[in-house]
Image (cartoon, rainbow, N blue to C red; front, side, top):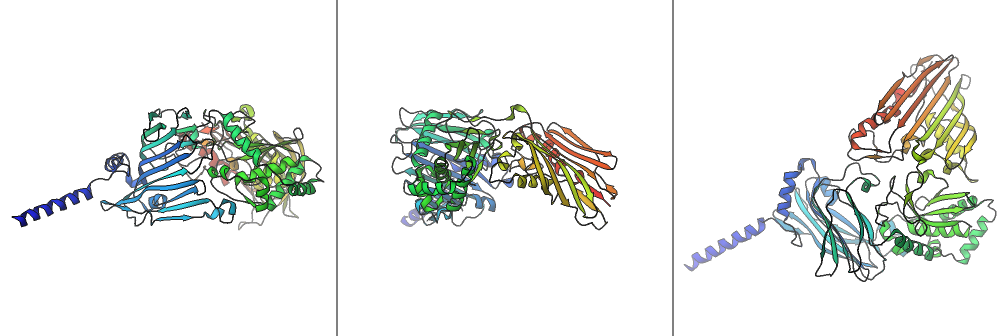
Length: 639
């Protein structure tokens, strides 16, 4: 009897173990039943066409009463392909080891009906290669969290917290894009604030308002947004997805003024030059005839004495240094480089302001004071009435003394401008690019000789790339002409209008006609001019894509005209393009061909009517752009 009882107990124990092993898992904090979420994901999404699906994705940013930040990240992701493993199998978690602690809550894999933990053996703390030569930034670390022994399909869970050790920040801000790179069943975003402080936020239309509650453990007031069954972020991803994707912009700063003063004070505090640096600057700028020339000397000094360190913007202000230290060490991240250049510009007699530009075009002011929709830190430089009005980019160490750089983009000067605003859009007129060439063939030299005209305004205005005593404007024009006429050399240019809004100039050029082809023909291709409309397109525009999900964002209406008036001399015309006109909701493409005695005129024009094209309008826009680059509409043959 006792033996039978033992057998029964053993069987029941084995059954219990089996049931426990095959029971659907819960998240590490017990908040979600992963099995239920997986069933919902399988019902909603086509796993055969997805690399991965988030079952849970959440981020929490909490500001403690002493101004320390606690950030928690958590995801549970179902992986179906090797590409999914590449994306989520390993996490690279950057943090500031001097000011922050990193704590892992969960890093495990659900496979074969059980959890396989990866921590801590799967964790490796490293010094990022971007800062391995920069001793002052050695506190910036990255922990690689590796999932071990992954087999498909599987579920990966990762959760960690980064907490400030001591108060060092004045506040926090950001932009949370609700759609993630892959579809998600549950997306949560939380802001935690102490009593007496309320976050400023703006949420996209269609999102549910945050749930507000008091957290008993921390005493913080929590604001939590939850979205369910969220499709992945529209592809291709643009510079500023918050301009169209569901998003939450948020800030603990009460206003742009408050946030701006924090940045301005830090900018002023670090802009300190030693006497030796001042003497060095004076020595190289003493003979400069203009303020603009002095500014160019500053660029030369920064280029010669400072190596750029490319790292995440969120760590840069906490690791900002004084200008003399930046100079002496010979390296600097974006903020440090901007501080160094600004100090030098100021010592050279110019006025400097901290500056941010919008990531994309149009307004970025959603009501919450955040730089989340702006490019990294830069400097606005002014001097000599209007001699210098320029944006300094510390990444490229360039000074754009013109307005094309800020055309249709938001500009924010913390401590000077109350909030970001778009200051120049051309008042609705299209930006115009106009290139005309009158070419004559010289049989003796086998060359084309010509003269013509170029004009660019608005977003196409090249003033900032041509002005200044240290620049050769002809080189820039030669690149423009050389794109349209391969190998062209500019022999003369004579500007009639030359300012920040508009450049208009006469030009003369010559180009080798090239070797004859197998049919004894000379080929003349009127190509795409450099810095023209196709170069103006965002990097996310790929003409090989027949379909896209995200909108196309442009600087405004754009129009371009490239015309060639050809006298081939003794050569016979073998082929000229046929006239073409395409007109659709996106705009127009027009190829005009005219014979004028011994000359042939071919004019190619494209006009894009809108600043923003929806995904459904992409085929019409693409048709115009494909026509613009089609060799059939730009090639002539002579014999």
